[in-house]
Image (tube, rainbow, N blue to C red; front, side, top):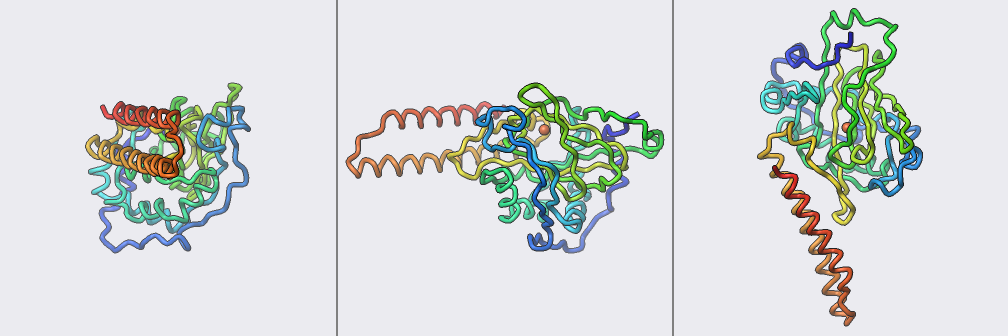
Length: 321
Ligand SMILES: [Fe+2]
């Protein structure tokens, strides 16, 4: 039988008692180990309309991103008592998740994802200038651990990995999944995506320190179980466009059950209002410039803009429950 259903109590074995030694700071020159993906699947490749998302990318093949040293430091940051006491979420969807540890408990991880070099890599592959959606979505950790017995009963005859998630769309436009465990003996662990013609394509899972990028908000996908290896730890960071004028369909549907609401709604409201603020400033500038140049007021464009902002605010409000 498959043993990948997370059992938080077993993860005790992964936890150091504490760590008090000063941690190194993130240095892109040594902690990144980036090699561009050999191949990416575009929306067009999987028969989806090219305007369905914000990027031409559907899903990338795994590509090396962080060095082993960087992964080791990040693991050190999350396996602490503070993180497990304050950031652990256990739901039916995912038995063991750590969320909200950045930047407070995991400054190295936070800096790794905020680093301009990291962001330029993610942006280049997706073709969109991206930033992490909110601090809350930096370095979300999913943990599966299985006990020795289940591992021992598994045989090479085991062929088809069962899904570990249902078919779903993500809440944020683009996600980056990084493998934090030694996956060299793992079988499976693919991401399955559904094409526009209804076929299912499987993208192989990443090795330790490697990543895949997925435009998960617009592509129906599911994670398949990985067999072999005693633990499987993945780190997921979600992104949105940096440019406030680029479409952003973020919602909080799948996020609410796995978040402290006070913090989530603070960060959500702050980001949504900041985007709105920049849009209003931009709009005001154009309005004034055109007026100063004695050009007629572009009523049609103003009404379109205002309608978009009404929808933005309504969407922002709807997500707060
Ligand atoms: Fe997903």
